[in-house]
Length: 413
View (cartoon, one colour):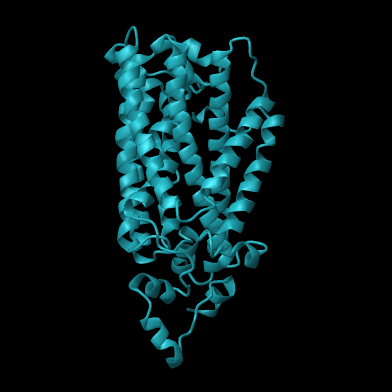
């Protein structure tokens, strides 16, 4: 490796004849990591299923599309969601293939910023890598903020539905936000149980999806016509051109396919990462497309009062949709509880994602106090300091909600 890359902070060991014997004792995965200049610090406890659990639990397309079912109607209507999912899924497939190719060639917990350093022209490699690393970590932090706020809003919304006289205030959601962030923090403190937690969150999401997919259409008193679902275009954006409204509205269907890089940052915790990481990435796209598309179709057919979704006192449109379809508040709360459980799994996965990014970037001296943040707890087998600091930042950012009602996208759930 050249000196520029070494200055950036990636520590490459130059092996002499004296330690060749030690290298021969490494397994293939550790050997490949050593060739990139790193030592194996965490145990490879994850299987392909548990890595898929982390990746899909974070992306959770059907969970994310819940918001787009309502907000997307103003910028394209059902057409935007139904056909937008297909379009974004095709694009996400291309993104997934690119990520998979890079992860297979250079399986490293740093992911994008490591690849930028390796592949960018020598003159710009350090800057490109540094910028990519900061954007990636910041993105993971704000994803955790968004998910925690969505789940917190869902919790408060359920309480309001059960207590009609209750008026939701920003501080109610803020408290619930902190509870969700703190509760999810615990699961990433124990490396031995994390693979099992990831697998459990995957199954929780899929079971919740199936239950909602069956129950809501079955219990809905009336159903929309097929024309409303597959051929109804709405433009309430203020743009005169329908095409512009559709393109702008695609952000709603893009969000449920975000964070595909999550699995790449688990490359140092799974055996044969050059094979398992691509499987997890492409599996996330495939499952995400199937679940989000059928979920959207089912919810659109089951809609009763669209204005009621926009003006619900619960401030959680999908909860109001459940209430309209079932006609029983307790039943709607039960279904929303499934979404909340799925959301907590999403938050746990987001914590895993942000902690690995923080740890690996600090290891390469991309963050202040890098030596402190780059430590892996030998007993817990997790980068506990990076995890703690990241979650504290998430907690602090939650205070913005008290000052700005629209600071975050609350409608994720």
